[in-house]
Image 1 (cartoon, helix red, strand yellow):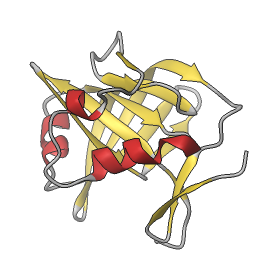
Image 2 (image 1 turned 180 degrees about the horizontal axis):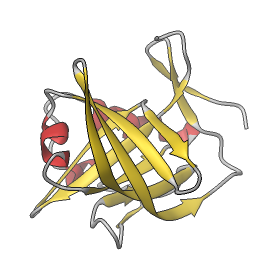
Image 3 (image 1 turned 90 degrees about the vertical axis):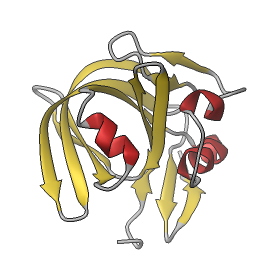
Length: 153
């Protein structure tokens, strides 16, 4: 599957006083009416554990110039998401309280409606609550063959 290019996103959630997030390349649109998305997370990850308790979360779909942000959120042993976005334009989503990274191609807030175990991953099917912004002029960041790559716009 490394041969398949995929958009790079940061999924974040607020868990009490802490903020968590991770880089994913498995966010997809499922339905336009109603607006539904799906994210796939490693079942043994802490973010997955938190999303089983917290239904509302955000996904920031990164732009070509945001590979450093993707790398920060992908690093092992990463600190709180608040530290990972230091110096990076961001805000809290009004519906989820989760960190939304700005200057990507789009960002959304979602509420999980169904959880589906799938091998060593867990799928979170969610209804879109809000689209924070859309910037069609920016090219997306993609992951292909294990590397982040800018995509021509």
